[in-house]
Length: 333
Image (cartoon, rainbow, N blue to C red; front, side, top):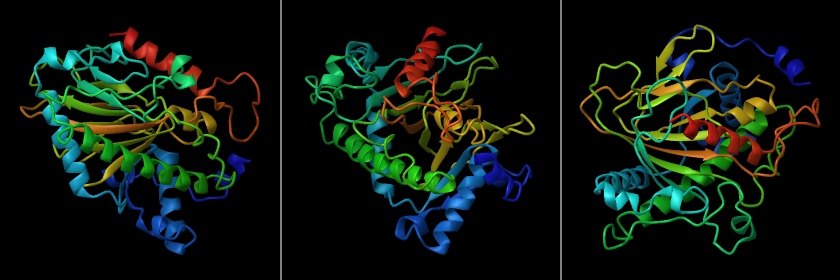
């Protein structure tokens, strides 16, 4: 069904300009009235992006620059703390993969361990919740540095506000993608239900002027979940691999815009028609680079069987898939 749907549409342009590889889309018409002609054009532009590299940038999303800037400022304050303070909230000490992740802990390929540090938060799930007690994937309460080190209004409050807004935006993006597919606008209702796994990661890439080409900020990888929403600062460094030419294309920052990309789960659901592309981060300059990324991984009990119903058995669940991919990425470091 999906292949017939695709064959009835015009082929995607293979022009190699950055705008064609990673288009920028104003999604405000869809948010205002998802049934309008302008909203239909938004859906079509995003559908074409999903068919090519799976990457696009969005503006008109409704999240204020003040909220974005406050989250970046909070992130910079945390990462400027002494290492011993950051290690007090190491993610390995807490359920649900929440807290600080040190430099060099993760890698995706044969390059050197990634030159980045991060801080994980997500939906708040209390310790006494059955999913936390059962040690289900990404289920747990958030952890925060001592307020004597970072006052609540300087870190926790702006991070929680940002998460709330971007989490809501991720649901809207899934609605757009649902309308781009031939399975009805409610195809992702189950995936969005319950307490979806939606880890958010504050990221810091220290200045890197080393000439070793194996040392990257984030080595080449595809994202594990369904969709990713990235806010990058104006230093740049994100590169996506063009599906047709295998060329690495820079994704120039657009102030206030989010980079959205298709992850492996959405690619699995569409049998590879929607592309989960390889991407990486290079920060070979004298400035610190910051970004904030939300991975919408969804209801962990959902099956990753293709949406067209062609393979009803043998497919992993979200939880099974995510545990394997994350274990592999940390095991390589």
